Length: 40
Image 1 (tube, helix red, strand yellow):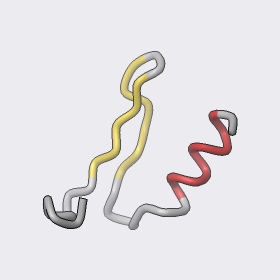
Image 2 (spheres, helix red, strand yellow):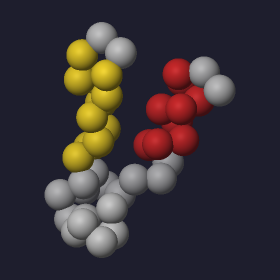
Image 3 (cartoon, helix red, strand yellow):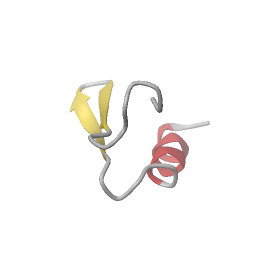
Image 4 (cartoon, helix red, strand yellow):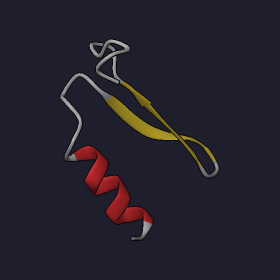
């Protein structure tokens, strides 16, 4: 799996409230503000 496939897979499986993006160089961040600890 390449980077583009990974990004597509993530974006297709998060809600409209979640945010996914590149944090730095080769680091990424996924913020899920409406997800509790149990759901994570």
